[in-house]
Length: 289
Image (spheres, rainbow, N blue to C red):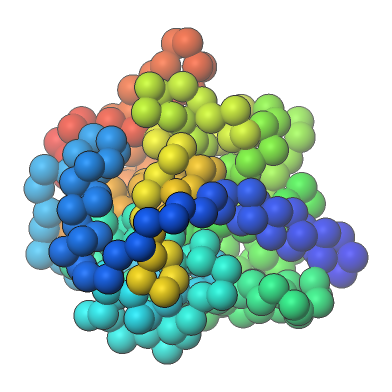
């Protein structure tokens, strides 16, 4: 069983590494970062028009967050480093959508560690998120095999009223008979996210099919990166962060049970007949809250 889970963690690492695409541009102030975001194609399309007063806490279970980045200077972070950059990029997308969101980075991946050690850290990070009673867990890891321990933790999150937004993966596969976890767990609090380009066409690498609940932008996404940089990434993790950011905004208006929030998200989604999937529709979603 341990060898299977190590394989899953390697698949998870492959997902993360496949999404990093370095840009040469650098910036050093929050104002610079905001100017860059103003020129992105996605921010105005996904961001809700209204935001409420409820404090929303999001656990980003990933590679960590670089707390020295201008975007995170107002956040108290215990794990304030990110050698890979993926977690910093994901957290930047979430915070770009909802500036007031509280980010708690829970790092599970370390580049030079053994697979079994990364496995232990993954479960520990998820357990910690549940213990902290966060509102949303944003999680990029996935793999083809069922894990009893992982299911147990995510079931505890369901019982605690915590949403878990997860990436569908970047293998370009149709899911259904072929499982990917945590997307394929039958839990009411899990939202599985696929990626599209700016024309609402599925990104070639994005997984799709039955367990993937919703799609949104995930191609050529600019966001924060360690050492005060900005990077361009493509993948389902970027789309996952967008869904997390939008749902954080919605929950700031009204906190509801995960199952209800998930139903509202899917009810408000727009169906793509060409793609055969549902896409985020922020304008309709905000009316549900």
